[in-house]
Amino acid sequence: MDLAGKSRIIHDTVDIGCYEYDGLIPAINFHYIALTATFVTLTWNSAARATGHQIRYRESNGQWGTAVAYVNPTSIGNLITGITYEFQIHRVNDDEHSGWSPTLRLMHTIRLERIKVYSGVIFEIC
Image (cartoon, rainbow, N blue to C red; front, side, top):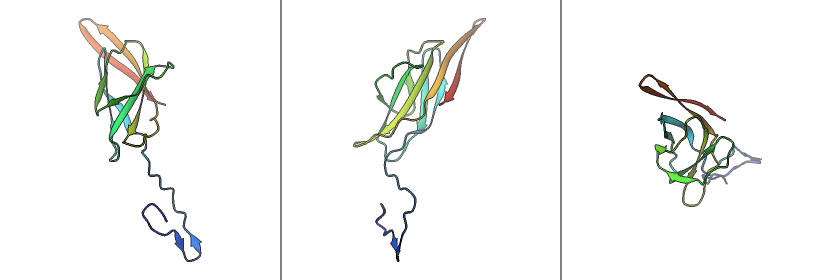
């Protein structure tokens, strides 16, 4: 039987069908929507079965920090100009966690021009 309760045996043939994954998949469309001199705002697409999300981040090639629960969208502060940060997200529910998403890498840059302050970012998904 498959997950829907249907028989996979048809006459003398077993229909293996496609793989029916029933677990949580990582969050998709994980990206930033705002960046200032000290924080980044991140957003993602939620899934129906996920009851929450955890984000972990680090300075590029450093140790991952402890994953913390967040709501969508969320802001992470105390960023330092000139540092490249890496972010990952995964979905959680009461009894399982998805795998971690691909890494979102942001290089936090800031430039002064006369009196105006411009904040910029170089990003990639690994």
